[in-house]
Image (cartoon, rainbow, N blue to C red; front, top):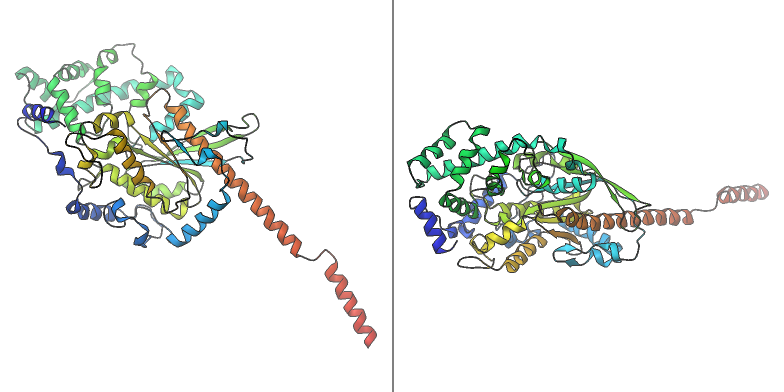
Length: 481
C-alpha cells in the first residue's frame, strides 16, 4: 500500500504497521515453506509417492520437489500422454486457443462426432478458492434451484451469523494491535463485539462500528496483506440496513457471496446438452465438490475413479494471503500451484481433460494496484506500490502452465469473478470445451478398439480352415500307410 495509506492505518492502529516485503518468499523462506509442505506430502493415503525430482521446475514452486498426491514415473506419463496427444492432433481450434483467458467456445466450429460423456467432474483446489461457488453457479444456471424463496430462506440466519462473526474477528484483531477508537463509547461497542455473545439485535452495533472510516482502512490494509481471508466482509457490512429488515430475503448474489468451508463432499447431477447436437445428445455429469483443507485431501482419491474431467479452482487474490491452516505463513497461491502440479503429475489424471478456473478476478484487480505480486514471489513483476494487472496475471498463468509435465495437453482456462452476472455462462464455456475434448477421446478410444478387433480378426484363419487342413493331412498319412 502507498505511504499515505500505510501511515494512516498505522496511526489508527497505534503505530502498528507491517512491511509487505517481510512476506517475500526469498531463499531464506523457501526452506521453511518446503519443510512444511513436505510434512503434508502424504495427504492421500494408499498411494505411491513420486520421487523423480527432475520432473519439477525448482523455481516454479518453493525450490524443491513437493508432492501432495501420489504420482507415477514421469517418463511413462509423458509417453502415454504424448501418444494420446497425437490421436487428438486434429482437435478443433476451440480446444487449442484461448480468448481472454477463456477457451474459445466450439459452438461456431464444424459439428463433431464426439461421443456422449458420463461420469463426474471433480472440482479441486485449496480451501477458500471458490470451488463451492463455481459448483453453485453451474447448478443454479442449469436447474434454477435458487430461484425459489424456500431455497434462499435458510441463508437469512447463516448470513446474520457470518456478519457477527466477521465483525468479532475484525475487532479482536484491532484491539490486539492497540487500535485507537474515535471515543470511549466506540471502544465500549468494540469490546462488546469482541468479548460478548452477539445476536441478531447486535447487527445495528456492527453497522455503527463499520461507519468508522479508520476501521474500514484497517480492514482494507489487513485484507491486502492476507490476514483476512473472508472476501465478502465489506459487502455484507454495507448491506446491514437492508438485512435487518423483517421481510429481508437474500438474493441469488447474496447466496453466492456467502462463504463457508465444505465440511463433507457434495455432489449434484447436471445435464449438459451437446453444443453441436443439443437435441440428440446430452452429457450427464456429476459435479463433485470436496473440501480443500489439507486434512480433507486425504480422502480425495475416493472420488477419482469416476472422474471424467478435472476442474481445478484457484483464487487470484490469494497471491498475498497466508494459507489458513499453515503454521509457517505458507503463501496460499504457492500452495495452490504445488497442489495443481501434483495433480497433473498423478497417474489418476494423466489422460483427463483439465479445466483451470481463476476466481476472484475483481478483488485481484483492486489488490494488485496496492500491493505488488513481487512482494511475494521472487521473479514476479516488481513495484513500489503495486504493479500492472496484465503483467501480474501473465506471470501467474505462466507459473500454473509450467506445472503440467505434458506440453501437448491443452488446459482449458477461465478467468472470472465468480459472483458476476455472466459467471455461470463463462464457467460453462470452458466446461463445454473440456466435455467435447473428452468426447473426442472416447471416440478415438472406441475407434482404436474396433480397429484392434478388426486386425485381430483378419490375422485369424477363416472358420473351418484349420479343420480342413487337419483332415487333409490325415488322409495323406493314411494313403502312405
